[in-house]
Length: 305
Image 1 (cartoon, rainbow, N blue to C red):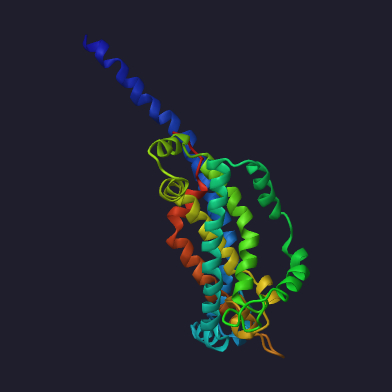
Image 2 (cartoon, helix red, strand yellow):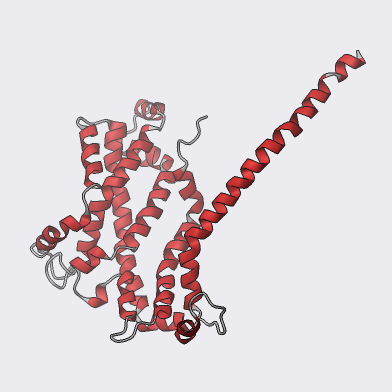
């Protein structure tokens, strides 16, 4: 009896060491590859940070890849004050925050109608919204400019009395171009939600608004967080539409503040690097704040059960 009871134990203990040597090299190689790719991806940003801490005279004499003799944050103070970056940051928030919120709000409505209510022609609507993302924005520059100069607005909404040279115009064009992608993502996510939840809500007497706002939307938080991070980064970094649809320098977003750091006869690239790092900081901070939700949104549907 003792020999029978003790027999299986060596098999269980002997099976573990044989699997570990085969797994460890693969995982080590994967970690090395990911670390190398991460360093390669971060190299331009690290070089910009390094250059922004050095005087331009030093880098022009010894080169950007030389050992530093003097490091300071003087360029950051100069970039922030010389470019009027505080006002441009405020302008960007006035454009990006409403644009992101309204884009997600409208996209959620459309996705809910297609995926949950299942209206007639929903698939065709989804194709139209998705196809809109395939149109290059540069093709629409001239028609949009002509259209916005002819759409009237009251004086309290626009100094020009039109959509041109107003925050409303830039917000509207971002919503128009970003809603299609959000509809596509939200529709696919809502289709993966259990249909039994909606059926139970209908049995309990819940209306369409209750089904949308109190049942579906709380379940879509990971997808909304991932989309909010992406959309804010895209709208925040946009320079084309603000350049086309605005003429007042004090209304321009923060990406245009970098133009104020360019001299007429001399270009201090270290100063420009400091301004670029300051401009990039808000999106980096937002990503770290929403990192958990962003990763959860990206990995939706990766596993089952």
